[in-house]
Image (cartoon, rainbow, N blue to C red; front, side, top):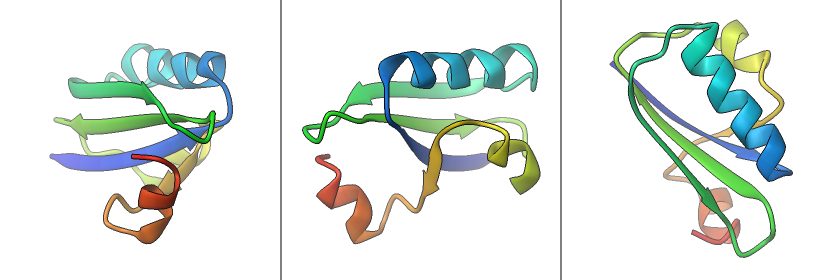
Length: 76
């Protein structure tokens, strides 16, 4: 199992990334999408499938550590 979070600039980019995770990469598990007060969008994933870092780099979002100050500053 793998958990990660990513920040996207737009809702469309977020939805496109989520569709790609499920459709192309076969991710199953929990996927949560929500807007941030900064106007950006947060995607949180608890995947039953382990993904390589190179796979996540193919998405438009910026991967973040959910425990960092960066996430708190992003408005969650």
